[in-house]
Length: 401
Image (cartoon, rainbow, N blue to C red):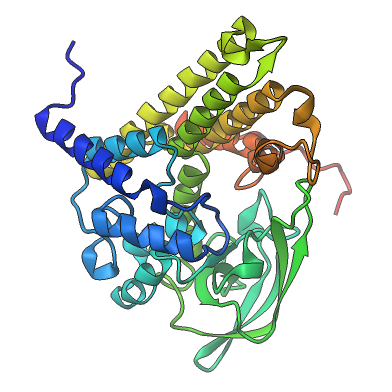
């Protein structure tokens, strides 16, 4: 069996390697999901210019404008992962809103928002979950009432990542109060500087305010700042959720993390023996390495379906569940590899890598819940992917309201 990519693709691989060697010193030390700094934006511009980020986004919207090519995408991911270099910005705006606008936005919305978003000049947050509407998102109560050419928004969102640093929000609101719950929602985009918006950070077990509460009090938003039509917000939201689950289960991030753990296990020792030579640790590593490879090849399956404009069905539905659990288990291996140093946190002088693995371990545990809990993901897989019947609702007790 010949698994070689062929001369054309091997030549492309050499181009990628050459770019990495010539530009690796310009790479930012880390890429986050908050507000990108100047180095991150400069790196993003360089990647877009050379076709390594925003590769298939049309040039008229600020992207590179290449035709989809699964193998070239795979080669880029492989070589950047080997070099431990970031593959550009990954955020709610770049990874979730931009593909939603490409699919469902107006021409004006695409031209206004895609380029500044992919270049990191505009940062977005997502207004979905509410205190009483988490797993049952369609029951959201944040409402928008009409006032001339505007909507007036009142309500609350919660678990809103990066709201404290965001310029804009894409937000689900109820515009049709008399419609069935899935049919009365609209998808609005508006500035976080709009009067009437209050952001309150929520401290998590990582020791950082990873999420926020957002309150809307008589927030005025023009009616034309809507994606698709009134009452179609549930349809648009599901398009965004599709991309969110792909972002949270990104196999390239898992590959980068795996490479860092391999380096760690070459460096850490127990009784003079490198952990990479310890059979128990090595077995755990190989098991996780196999799962990372499976996720990467699964990602190629999804790219193939996307290029052919096919619905991958259950193949897409498993990504978030499997990816988030895998990332947490990778962080757990790193914590164990650090031994007693793995329990340190915050400002200990003996902390390794600035506490990267400790924070990842706790944050990734949260992501098994966030973006749709593991239990909800399993229900989605069973019902939408496998066609199994929905779990029956408990019968009401006689006399209950």
